[in-house]
Image (cartoon, rainbow, N blue to C red; front, side):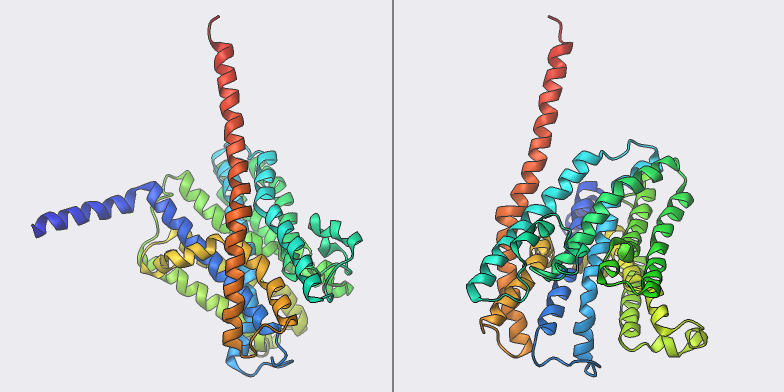
Length: 420
C-alpha cells in the first residue's frame, strides 16, 4: 500500500513539475506576492511618515531607518511594470513575431488603471470635504490634470489630491513609450539577444545621465519626477523580461531554475536591496573604498546611482519569483499574500487618502503599531471593494468585449466563405 502511495505521490509531483498551466499559475501567485510586499512597504512608510512624533533629520533608530527606506516599494512597482509589460514585446522581437498591437495594448492599460484611479480621486475629494481637510485639495480647474495623469508636470498640482498618484503619471508615460521601444526592438531582428540587451541597457543608462543633468541645471521636482529619472527601474524589469523571453524562444520557458540557484538569486536580491538602503541612509559607501577617492561630489554620486541599486535588487527578486523554484520563493505564493497582491493596486491607491482623512478626524492611535493596523484594515477593505466592483469588472468587460468582437468577425468570415 505504501508503495502505491509513493508511486502516486511521484506521479503527482511530476505532473506538478511539468504541467505548464499549473506552473504559470504558481508563477503568477508568486508575482502577486511581490506586489503585496511592495504595496505593504509603501503603506508602512506613509504610516511612519505622517506622524507628529516621528524623528526629523537624522534617523538614529533602526526601525525608523527601515520604515523610511520602505518607500522603495514604489520602485518595485516600476520594475514589475517593466517586466510584465515588456514580455510580449521581447518575445516578438526575439522570435520575429508580429509586433504587439498598440491599440489593444493601450486599452488594456487604460482599463487596468484609469477607472480605479478616478474613483479613488473622486471619493477622496468627498472625504476631504466631509472632514474639512483642505491641505491637498486641488481646485476644480486643476482636476483635468489628475484625470489625464498629468499632475506631475505642474508644481501646483504635484503631490496633491492623492500624493501617491504621482507614480501613475510616470507609469502612463512609460506605457506610451513602450510600443516605440518594442518597435525598435523588432527592427533589430530576431535572435539578436545581445542587441536587445544593449537597447535596454541604453534605456537604463538614461536615468543617471538625466539625474545628473537635472542636478547640474538646478531643475525642480517636475524634472526629478519625469519618466527619464525612473526609466532605469523599468529597464531593470525589462532585462528580466528579455531573459524570460529568451527561455521561451529556446523552449525552456517551463524549465525553472533549481532551488539552490533560486535561493542564491533571492539572497543576492536581499543583499542588494538592503545594501542600497544602507548606502542611501548613511552614505557609508561615499566615505569608504573606491568611492572615498572619487572626484565626484557625494550628491553627484547619489544622482548617478539614483534608485538603480534598489531596482537591481527587485529585478533579482522578480527573476527568482518568475523563473525559480523551491522553498526560497514558495512563500511568495502563500495564498493570503497572493490575494493581497491581487488587490495591491487598490491598496496602493487608497491607503494614503484614508490615512490623511482619519488623521485629520482624530481617529488614529498615536502608537505606531496600532496606527498601522487601523490604516491597513481600512485600506485593505477599500482595496477589496475597488477590486470587486471597479477593477475586475472593467478588466473582464474589456477582455469579454474583445473576445466577442473576434467571435463576430470569425462568424462573418465563415458566412462569406460558405457556398451560397
